[in-house]
Image (cartoon, rainbow, N blue to C red; front, side):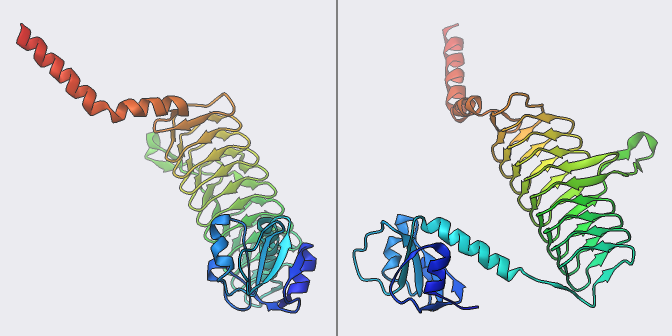
Length: 341
């Protein structure tokens, strides 16, 4: 699709400097701009590219002062970064606005399907499943029996939703994610027999789950992701875990069974949390933190493995870095003591 500078300026409520009829059909970085593209300048470190970029349109802040001629047509707005983010959102909506049900999709006769859904090739919707309005189900998605998918949710290619799981409204689940696989429970005292996992997974509204995440169903009851949770790629959530509202977990995070995590927490990459713990609201965990005890006071930051409070960790790390020198001093004192005897 093509848009003119005037159309973009009207959309962003911006002021045009240059050719109002200039047309664009793609987005680009300012340093990689090419004819027919639109870019933006928000970071002063990239100002040099404004004068050399081949982009047709460039969004800039209203207060930007030019120091040389610019070939591109400019659109001046209050915040170039916010304006470009708005364009990215619109572009994404247009790009992902798929509709229609493929002839190669399978939908059980007992399933209930809402209006304006998209179901791609080899998508499968099981018995008694309920699919809301405006849901997008990309190719090779599997939705098990009795599963529920809320309005405006997108399931990208290859997502697997096991039976009885419930996905809320406005969720995004990326390729390869598995929702509702069995929890890892066996009985060592009974020849390691598998313990049946008969619960489900409940994902509330406005949740986004990255690629290749695995969220296990509960043994009994539900594994729960509350409203607004955001997961990076490659995260494992075990059976009966509960993640509080608006908590963010970065890649390679692992939460063991039955742990309860509070609201507004932020976990950096490769964080591990053992089972049956309580993690307070607003907890921040640095990368590779290993949590082996409950965190009961809200708003703390932890580092290390085993993890402890960040301020104490930094002080301890200073001593750790000086450990060789400390050992040498002790050895020297011991040698002096022996020599004096």
